[in-house]
Image (cartoon, rainbow, N blue to C red; front, side, top):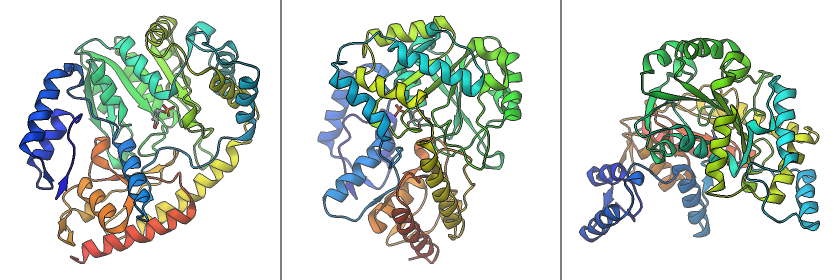
Length: 438
Ligand code: PLP
């Protein structure tokens, strides 16, 4: 039985915990939680703290207690930021580049973003169609607040990046979760999209390569989706390209606007330097799209963060316009680890895994472990498996329930080969034990 602090948890999560046999919640805590929930804004009632950040923090805390925990929960590359990028930021600091910048970003960074989209995707944008943000996360946040009215529907294919539904809730929109199928590579089909669109649909989210599955849309798949969107002119699209440089097996990266150029006037492209250049802590993202939307996103930023950090913007400009050679060794390592992890998962009893085409995540299917039992623990969901792996095998993974499609879990291979080998051995042993009944 676990004793946990439920302050700050959403209503739905606490109710789920109250009905679960695994949690003990005292009457005092419930009353405190009820009082807190009436104090805080209605807007927050459906919002959960990020489960991926929570699991990373839990793994770190257990390690600090001396447990040999291997964390496969984290969504950040394990490499250092390339030297030439760090040097650019250090130079900026040395020359006193430490003040507020224009809200939408320094001209040098905006020019680098424009060059990137022109050079890599053949897409033309003006400086007024570009905003630099505090990480890719703030780009989606600004967009949701800029576009979504209360009750507007936002179509989010599942499994999804954990923040899309919560940020939609903060904007008082209604997330419409569209479950994808493993047999379709976890990609939404044109027919599924068509069926999900209503007169209240405002926005469709496309994330390719995907967090958490690595699913990467091919040009013809995007053309099919684009044809549906062309038939529904009231629907906007956002394409989150943050993993655009992490694509395997020579597959070319293509986004919705490249596939269907007519959609450029109602598509916003989000991106950032966090993943491709191993710069998660720098907090630099960006968005390009139609000027009125970018202007609205910039207005929101002017009243929230003011601007992204000055010297980090210099580093990001160097990342985008400097030599791209630094990406190669990281991509090579991700590719090797992906090959290893997918084979290891498919060798496990009760587990199967599609090979991700991009990003640094795998999303194994654990249907074969549901209903098994060992060490007094029955596995009824990915949540149970995550708890079992952490409690008995010191491996931290993120349960699929956090990404809206179960029974799966997300494993990040942005960690050393040595840790991955040990983690795969432990999970294999756990799966065998569960299937043997303990
Ligand atoms: N979009 C996706 C799909 C992500 O996985 C992430 C980070 O995990 C982000 C956006 C946000 O990245 P950043 O760290 O730049 O805020």
